[in-house]
Image 1 (cartoon, rainbow, N blue to C red):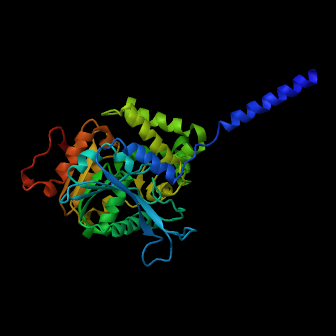
Image 2 (image 1 turned 120 degrees about the vertical axis):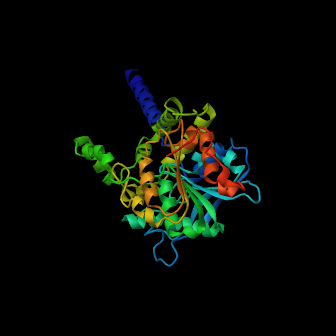
Image 3 (image 1 turned 135 degrees about the horizontal axis):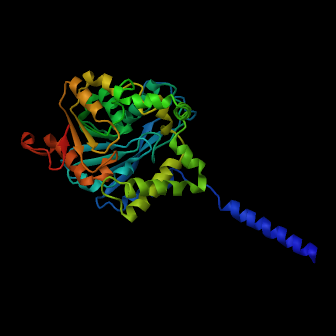
Length: 386
């Protein structure tokens, strides 16, 4: 009897352990999961759209490398969403930032599609686009990874004379692209762009001081080791979605500087963000090659300001942690029209925090494409210029 009880206890304990460990399965993700999550997020959009995977080939033209030493020569694709529009509407291409994807603009598509032909694209190695092995080993190679893949995408889409909008890191890529291919870009809209502040700027002295502390040294080491936020999400496995949920509900909810997400928006965005972050590491590994610790560009855009050939509008939320003073310095050196617009009640994700203010800023920036008398247009109420 005692032996029988002992065996039952062991069997029960074994089942309990199996049940516990089986409950800790990593949440599966893939490109298909990302596209499915994207469709769920965009289901709240009223404007019709077409989602496609645009073939960009296997490498830059004239180069023997395939998106820089990837072990595979299979074609790459950029996930693209094009919204219904009026036949004569100007084309606005929207490029997301670091650790984001084109779905982050979900609050903007309906309003902007009423005036533009909106095309939103996931950069190579992000969102629902192909995720090749990232083997770049320099800032130049890493910039080419994004610029050349975007150019191949433009050719495949047969685009020219478009307005290019980039947010944060996407603003950096958009700027570099416009510097290399100005003939295709009518106007550049940089939303809280990264890369305009130099590490030598006196205002960034606090970062230098922090790096000298043991905490700063540890974080700097992690940065130079290419330890990305996405690795934390993957490492947390089954707890990853809850971690993302806490972030989205805080950043765009309790700690929002503007219009909070609804429960439906928060749930759909959380699901989408989790799958985009937990998928195979690829484009995210650009971080240490483009920026030094503290998000200072290794090849600052400020140095290229005299070479600017495309009229530019900067848009910042008034609570944006990105310093708009870098844009002011760049404007002094530019030989093309340049304006800086600040949107109230908005942080770095100005297009989520204050959608209506952001839309007003974009429409004002593009007034020469939308109205017959652009010079008569005044800055919309609530916005300010810097």
